[in-house]
Amino acid sequence: MDRRQFLSLSASGMLGLGLSPVLVSCGSKSGGRNMRDKYSVIILGDTHFDTEPAEVYHSNYNEQVEWLNRVQRAEFARNGEMWRERCPRLVKRATELADSNTRMVLQMGDLIQGDCGKGEVHQKMLTDVMDNFKGQFGGLPFVTVVGNHDIRGVDALETYHRFMPGRMGQELGKEITKTTFDFWIGPDAYIVVDFNNPDDAEVEKLLEETKDARYTFIVIHGTVLPADCGSCRWFYHGSEKDTEIRRHFRRLFAERDAIVLCGHIHRTEFADWYGDGGRITQMTMNSVWSRDELGKYEVTSQGASEYGEMRKKVTALDNGSAPKDETALFDEYRPGLKQYSVSPAAGSYKMNVSKSGVSIDFYAGDSQELSQQFILR
Image 1 (cartoon, helix red, strand yellow):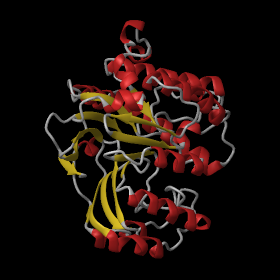
Image 2: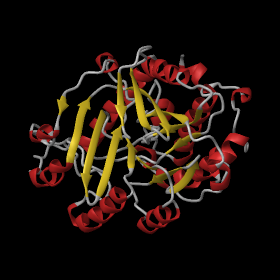
Image 3: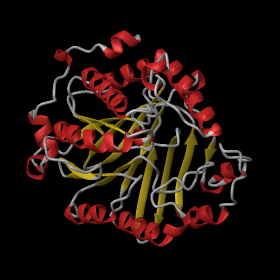
Image 4: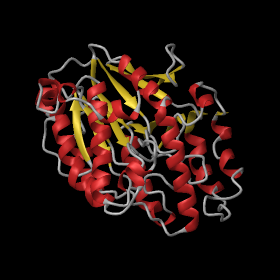
């Protein structure tokens, strides 16, 4: 699919922007609970939508900090190259995973690259990719959680908060006014959390309102369990000053035996952690197919003993500074890890939910064959 095809969707492909029966049942508790309790959800990780040439979305970009300018322009080049051919193949494969049991599509944030330099262009970038995905997925509800790139750039935060809650309301058939919100699929609660600007009172309210759910899914861009990477503090309430509130929400999630669906770190990662009187199972998903080799599933780290080891190998952060020793952070979580595996692979995911359990099927790249299955419950 070339750029002209991508940006020229007809209105006939936009099936579901009204309140279809599927959207209403996903958006209301009473309607949702009457649905059959066996279903699937198609999931995309970070997508960093962009295009070539970079001037299409970044002609107003004017970052003055040298190292940021360098890093971000390299990202524009990476994104344009991968959206030229590989990422359209990946998304097409994801559409083929949908069947009669599929209720919606979830996307884990960083839907777009951002860095547009102008609010109007930022909104166009959001609109272009939302319209494209809606067309390709045949009108299925398409729900995204805010990522850091989705609000990055001049007027980007204001633009996203003005545009996306309303768009999510259209997708789900309910009024949404915030970037933290919930919805139901059958007996299961999905709590969508803005990790950039945590609304703690709203999260606690939604946890209380959904306490009788069969499964509780936390949909969030950044991780809840710290990621073993250079930017390991980029997780939910990850700052050192937020240690108390981080542990508070960790306990609340664990007591609900929460299943965390997230992205951000550009890896396919599975972690099953027991502690605080319960369990947090975290599936981190990635659709940034930036290099050919990421179209194959290969495990690079496995087992609790490996958790935190990759961070120790980081010699410098993007700004050139030396990384801080974070051994104590990983030591806090390692004893509770019962399962842990990491792969840099990118692809698409199909989550299967029923009373007998929850699993996620991963298809690396545009593979027609199952690359790996993860059992979450």
